[in-house]
Amino acid sequence: MEHFLIYTNPHKDEGLATTSHIREYLSTRGKRVTVRADETGRRDGADAEAPRESLDGADCMVVLGGDGTMLQAARDARRLNIPMIGVNLGTLGYMTEIEPEGLDEALDRLIAGDYQQESRMMLKGTAFLTGDRTEDGWALNDIVISRSGSLQIIKFNIYVNGRFLHDYDADGVIVTTPTGSTGYNLSAGGPLVEPNAELIMVTPICPHTLNQRSIILSPEDVVEIEILPGREDRVQTVEANFDGSHVISLGAGDRVRVVKARKSTEFIRLSKVSFLEVLHKKMAD
Image 1 (cartoon, one colour):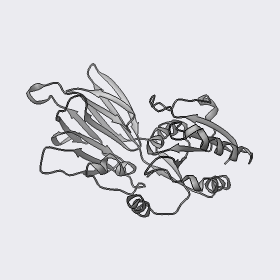
Image 2 (image 1 turned 90 degrees about the vertical axis):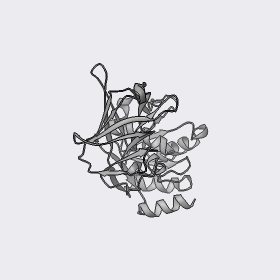
Image 3 (image 1 turned 180 degrees about the vertical axis):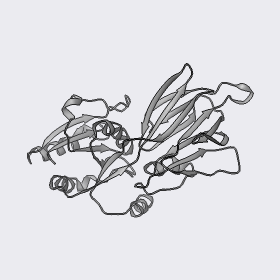
Image 4 (image 1 turned 30 degrees about the vertical axis):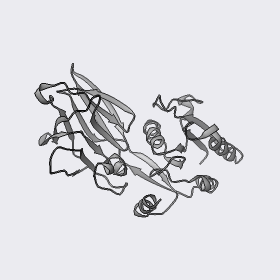
């Protein structure tokens, strides 16, 4: 590898100490280094140092932060087509492989080409809104349809491949990838899935029913959520949230169609430790 893109979260990397260390470490070994900052709050992965065209040809993206920073970086990686690896400056860090104490060794392995690469599926969601408007969003983890504003139960229908599946009164619904199974899906009682798998999971959030089950679907399936009028035709305040970043406001009659995205996120793997071993370690910490 010759050109490294450092994608850093300034709120996690205090004083950009780790960013500066990586840049100096790689530069002294004759490698080209570009720094890009995720400006938390703006949530758009704003470029703090280099214009986008200068990122073309980067061999990998080294992401500094936690899982949230990884998710935001994945949105840019989708456009830039750059494999990524994370340095854990957060808490659990399911998606960040490198711990700070092993950083230099990891950089040496990247330089030497001693790594593997794996693909993670992403989701594309299209919101069909009133006035014949549409809006797209992408997610590596999940697309969450949930209430906003005052406490209320959302009424919605779910369709799969154009066929009615079930109607729900619930706090919302999570459509997730295998990578996202350890996130909100897990908190909502959904299953854990090996992240290299390809499937789509649909998990209701606090449904008002005794039958609460996640639904496991093929990656080729098309999931559609239709927002219904609230009880007594009350106006429902609902939003579609893509990886906790991009938000689309929804109302009665609006629909969100979710499919497997054409592009995947490429992860660089240094460790041969299995997902189950990582899961055991994270749960024991």
